[in-house]
Image (cartoon, rainbow, N blue to C red; front, top):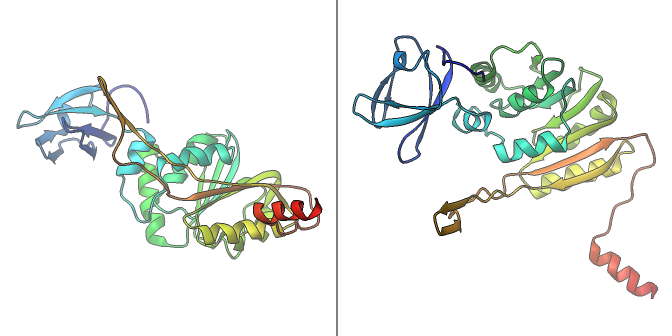
Length: 281
């Protein structure tokens, strides 16, 4: 995303009076048929964002460049996306920093890839593994439409369950259904002190992943969270939570690559620990 006048080839977000959103790509001589009429792109190209434009039927639309969150929610999808509320948590939980070498698998529709690219900056590197050609093609188009061609992105048709050829890595971020199959490979590819993070929708998957991490002698500081997002409506004296909220989407589990030691024992739940304390007393 850049500042200054809007140019041909850029994505633009249009918002109508009912707050419906339309993501369009500007083309010289092109036009878009909206619910409120037709908008000629030439009347938009070369003008600043943040202003209202009028269609052929007199409908007004607020016109802005889309944020990454806007673009992710409206962009074409080949696979289910990681939602913005989770993208922000992943960036902090995995501590993605400028200059980092980061591996993600799989690429999906490219939402996480774009967030990682912006975080590592031009001095970093993002390796993205995706075994499905149709997903990789959609992701590449989405990434180039929003960020342009990025030299720091390396996309590979690599099965991460088989191995990780790129190393050493500072961070590994997984959006695959069986991340426990990656733990052994990650111990070799990830530097000590690095972070391994996984994004999983269900409890059984998360338990399997955490169990494998705990059995390993190479990971510690294991933590699992989920993020619930509840919007609020504030209109004068009417203040209330929105009727709909983005509740559970996935569990985010992170762990640090550490010096080898013996495997951790299985942890009893809190109830077992309380009963053990009672017997000791």
